[in-house]
Image 1: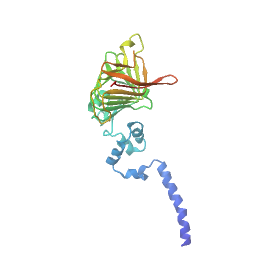
Image 2 (image 1 turned 90 degrees about the vertical axis):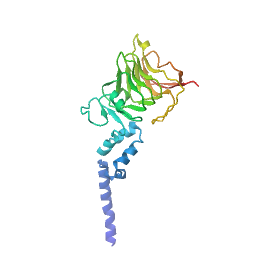
Image 3 (image 1 turned 180 degrees about the vertical axis):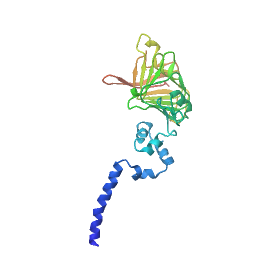
Image 4 (image 1 turned 60 degrees about the vertical axis):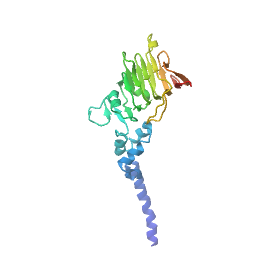
Length: 263
């Protein structure tokens, strides 16, 4: 009996070391969370912020990649996709916005420029760039267009570059527009007085509820680079620029400000 008791501890390190080695090799079956069914896992993933948490879950294993990229959690815009029948994947932003449901998140693939010309968004959505930096995902508004994106509902933009050759990058009509970690670029030439990164025609009287969770008309900008144009924000309603903060980096200026009703 004493010999058996001495042999048992000798076997356990061998077993535990093999288990740890298999876990590090990427086999997900040892994690208790993988005992949950797909519906439960997707529900958990839905509480994660799209970038970077939900995006990073897709790197864990094949199953998590499938669930984290499922159309129920977000839609994707990818110009390189040839199979148009793939659910939740669209060749351009306009078709993704049209197919989206209120509260959906649209992930726009990095690389190259995505054409965005007078795209009207009248439902609560979140648009996110798929690159590590905002300048890796560009929305380009060509001359002859009033704006790249026109907002009539509560929306959020994150990790995107929006460039307008002439006109404005973002036209805010109503709802709450959240701009976080983006780059807004306008023409820098003798015609820059015709350009403006953000134009708001909203008033401060309307209160809006949405799945995104923001209420009331207004614009909130955080950690965003604004380049070119006559001024950062042009308002024609009763909203005004407030709480402006600027951080000077080596080569860029980053802005934080709100556009809200003075009352």
